[in-house]
Length: 348
Image 1 (tube, rainbow, N blue to C red):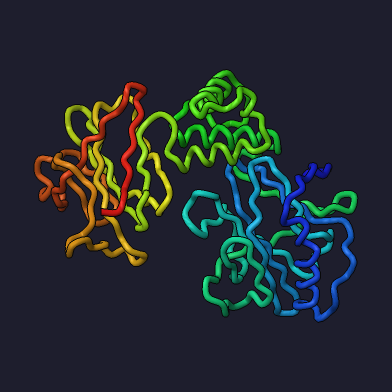
Image 2 (image 1 turned 45 degrees about the horizontal axis):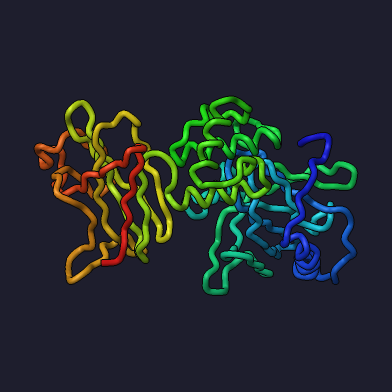
């Protein structure tokens, strides 16, 4: 923990933090709400846009509250007290990552969470629809000058300004720009990549330093913007996609990539790849094929290549059976003059 408390950013959930602390006191300790003293801050020193849920446990009773979004380099007030009314727990997940993906934290206890802005007063079990048990890690904050501080960190051990720069670099990389290594350091490649992103979106030249830059970058990522190839799911179904790339005169296929409704995904592709191919199928929440007119709903074209039901990488499309695979028709992707292309999945 740092010896000096970082500055916090005011937010709309901070106004609700006192009522949450009071509710936890009443639920966990059987007491009325106590006056707030100082605060507890959560600071994001990772390169990932993160959502966090807090849990407080006392006398075998627990309550949870979330989700608090933290951009890289950002701090937020999560409790209007430097002393939690019990043991303090945290669950974190990367925004735009797989659901319920904790960021390398231990599983000390499983507590109930909901979606959006939620509060669960009795969180050791889930009683309401739309809630679920997820792992929480116990956290012990350091108190400095009456302020309790918790840090989210990763192996690179960024400070807060470095985490902000690394977060920008990570999102630019995911969109196909080239900011160089994700190291949290200023440099000409990062500056050039950020300028290119700002210019592509027709934003003011100083937008790269704006407080809402992560909102802007996330919007670009969700829209499939930037150089390279993107899948975008405009349907109401989950899509599982397979990619084909021509390498050394033969087609290499890889799968599967999951694209949720309303999301875009840029699969990793070598910029020098001569041709790119796409095949996809719609599945339900259980992973079963979605049917249209009595047949599985698929999205392909006219180029034969190989797939397998589970995760795969297959070099060559001439004899799929030899690879224990099935031949399907992939769509050949056509790039524009700026080496950009997208495939959008829509309802039939």
